Image (tube, rainbow, N blue to C red; front, side):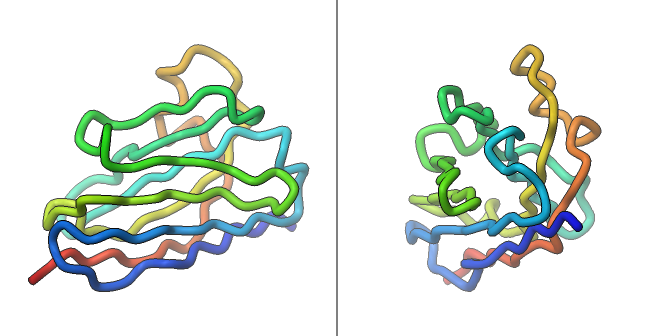
Length: 127
């Protein structure tokens, strides 16, 4: 049974940092790409970042490039999202997801390429 459990969300002031974690189980973690998506109230779910199964390539939404870093530890079956210089617009429910996709990079930006999702962790950026 595939399980993805996010943690690390919370309330942070603008300019602050958070590190999200996603613990995976029930599948061969190292064989799958991992992604982070987010959804703010009243908005559609949007791509944040993705990392290929061998950690060799990472991809980011333009809105977070230079501030967020995705990484993975295949020995610990965990994917991380380090978020720095947080802004109020980053407020959302953050989800991790797993994908068997191994094609061109733009596929990893698409939610339909992901087959399992976690329940999400809330990030609120406010003063």
